Length: 112
Image (cartoon, rainbow, N blue to C red; front, side, top):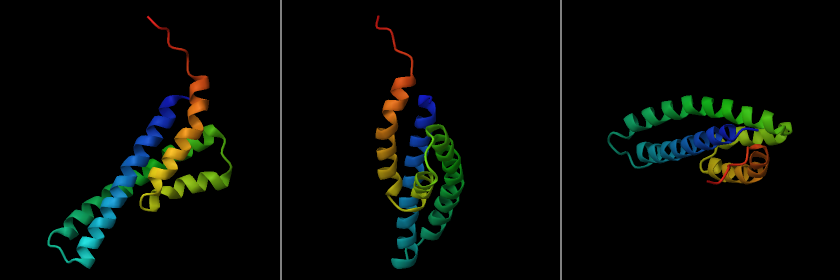
């Protein structure tokens, strides 16, 4: 498996995770604290998270299929983008697990 497959998954996991946390904070500000302007910020963050979550799903599915994960593990990773902060923990666990597979298949770098 190429390192780029893991890298693009990791980037999207962090981006969707951050956007989901911002969305939750925006919802608290909008409904709980009745902050002016929170509705506009929440709308923008919700749209960005929604579209980028779809890209995250594609990248996570690609990673899972190349890593030959069982269906249960694949679903667990795919759903991590819907639970606030879960994407960070799942990404770290998956990265540690797959780092050895990526390192084994990458060509050795010659030292100068």
